[in-house]
Image (tube, rainbow, N blue to C red; front, side):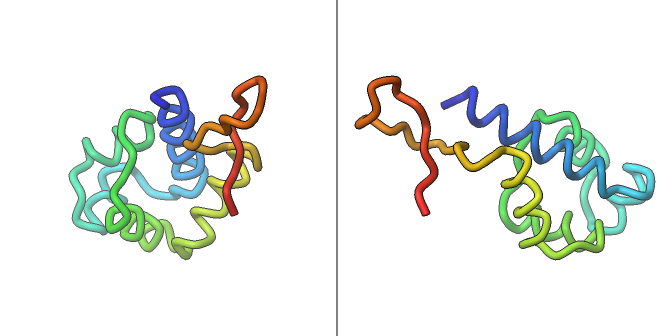
Length: 96
């Protein structure tokens, strides 16, 4: 599970970095977030709460759903935190 969490954090970091057009300090200040927290997100150290994720999306001038879709696309269709116990190889599956 920790490996999947790390994958998610890295995906969030990559997509946020791609969209940020201003400095970390300016981006963080505009949404009322500490620059160290923003930097931790961009370095894949933290994953944000939903309210923080929403503020980040607004700060990047992108809808939260579009930001989440880009993260989901980056991770791929097989990314999931739930292990498929019916599979012989214990692969992960996406519940939709």
